[in-house]
Image 1 (cartoon, rainbow, N blue to C red):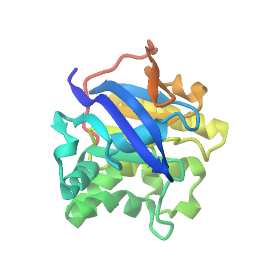
Image 2: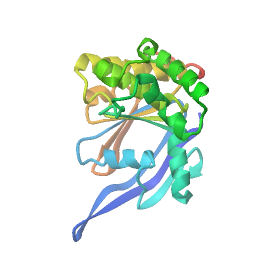
Image 3: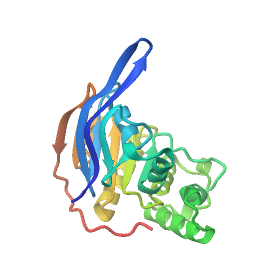
Length: 241
């Protein structure tokens, strides 16, 4: 499978008063299309910095980051914003839903920014809500949904543009253990049935092992990179929307 993400000797240095902090000290990692990768590390390990670079929310101090073969460091601000909206889907711990909007309206938001017409927006939003089992709740606002349902809406919103990579940052952090397991199963299903590339960031090794590959970050370096055999086969990709 072709590489969708390539990091080569990526470093990130922050100024901290008169001192400097090396958050990443030379990270090289490749993620191929269709992989489900867990990025795990303790607080201060550098995993959040790495997540921000992968999501094009920050730039490395040095090194190379290629996304779909494109050197991200050569892109201007508008081009990076377009890459984020068109090729990356984000799922956050806090859901980040607009409380006054219905589920379907929340899911449609990325398509509004992409300039998609109203009828097509609604069709695609209902399709991805059906994909995560929430079409019947399309007209409900976040306050009318459980935490797990809100996170499923957030996943649907992240999938609406058919992203090359789905980035999930501690996606079960605000959920009870049972609901958290349901969301992890949802990620596994998306990976299994649609060959969705997923990078899940977590501090919890028990969550990390739900992925087929676990990359451990420690002291700004890749400490371990382990591939695991999952109990399912990955099939040919099917259209999400």
